[in-house]
Length: 146
Image (cartoon, rainbow, N blue to C red; front, top):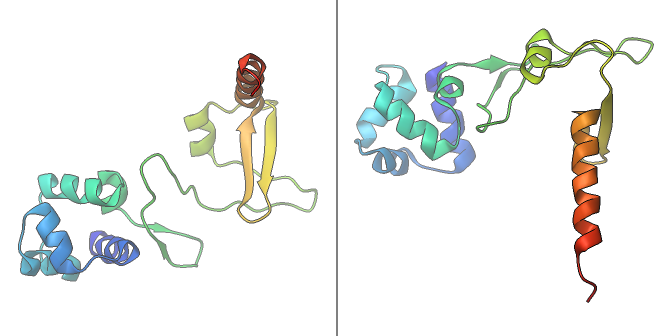
């Protein structure tokens, strides 16, 4: 788990083992042992690694797999990978319980469907979206013309 994440994150960020070792104040050999699974870093070193890579300690040490597609890299802080859902023949999908609980989603709640032709689909609670739109409109109304 941890060793796979260390290798993935280092490669994603384009660092050598030597560069990461320098950033967290250890030898390259010590870092290589972590990637080989011979030893594991202490919690303080995990904290430094998480800071360097912009992830949480939790996502650094656990592995996320995607339904037979392999191991996913740890997400950045504030970003989450919740797994996959299947759209049924009526176009419906079930949002995972953990997501509903984290974002306080309940049955009957309105969600705004946003899309980006290149990036995909996002669901945003209607109340949040409407509040942001109102703020944007208020901001636009008070801007002086140039």
